[in-house]
Length: 161
Image 1 (cartoon, rainbow, N blue to C red):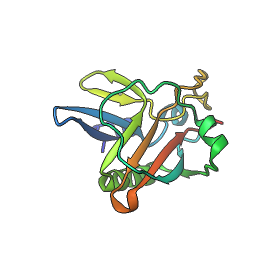
Image 2 (cartoon, one colour):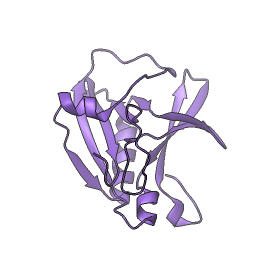
Image 3 (cartoon, rainbow, N blue to C red):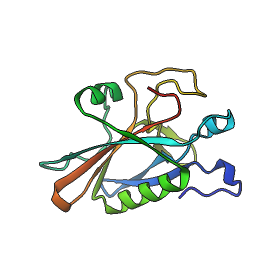
């Protein structure tokens, strides 16, 4: 959980990713949209999940993921998005991440007080953000030991297609 003395600034769950047992990377997973909230729009996040099974786990490391676009995924799968408030997002993300044996993340790398990945959501224009970036969406894919199941989690904000 993200912590701050100012509760209005708390808007993430942090997932620590260990790379080859040598370095850690922090994935910043949004639990609300502060920009939408502060502009008077719906701050909740819509989550779509594509479930599948894997034959083998993917290679670990940092790679250029190339183009990643929710619209392409949605054309090949029936993704249903559900609204989640901040508490629901926090609980769901923590529960799913604790069960996972591996996480795959698409997003942008950043370096502030630590090195991490953010923008793990749709990058299309939203109610409060006018910039419309296609093909650079972010997502979280979790792999579970049970039944070799995996889930691709797609995150959208108010007003995103």
